[in-house]
Image (cartoon, rainbow, N blue to C red; front, side, top):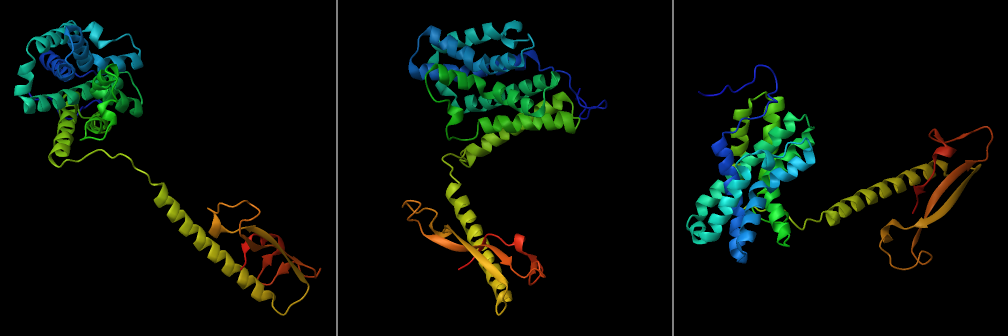
Length: 311
């Protein structure tokens, strides 16, 4: 029977009932990621089991420790720990089997990430967490196990390095799940299926077109250049305003202009001392000596004229 698409009673905030076989499969596949690394490092049986547990259960453990509702999945589930131990032992005894199906493992791995993301996001929604926390819990559940695995091995987590989309896929899946449940009133089953599809699609597209996550980004030179252009345009506008004001005073008496010197904006990167740096003469204020007139020509108050650049 196909479940209904839209919840008639508003947002579906009940826990999504992921089938036990699918849940166990996701845990097992997550454990495989730890086994692959253990095989590369030539670890012993304990190393295989520990990395399998971290890969399959690490993300959910981080999530449950953050939520703190006495509902730790790996402790409450009757098959979570035995499953990861079994997979770790199998990987230790038959490591060559994993290298025969690299494409299958890649597909199953991203599917398991999608399921973990949906499960983590759903649990956060059940506990009435805010949108940011929902996305964080979904993402951590999806990629936290791999992060712990790399930390235990003393490596920089792979999700922090430039590569094809992985953690970004988890973020997109968590956002999709939240939007579908809360804003579109889609039922949990359909929201899970759609969010998993989003994770898989983004991952496959990034692999197919070799789209890499950005790294070593520095916008400071571009922004600084734009700011300097705007600053100099404002400076020229101020000079023009000063010339316009002074032209209105030409041929008139009864006023006094006070100037001050300021560091020249054209030498902001001058390496000499402050006393040696080029300075620009600017208008500080215009004082009208005629008591019968309190404004400069053009209706500009003497107190309103300050810091006008002057060549």
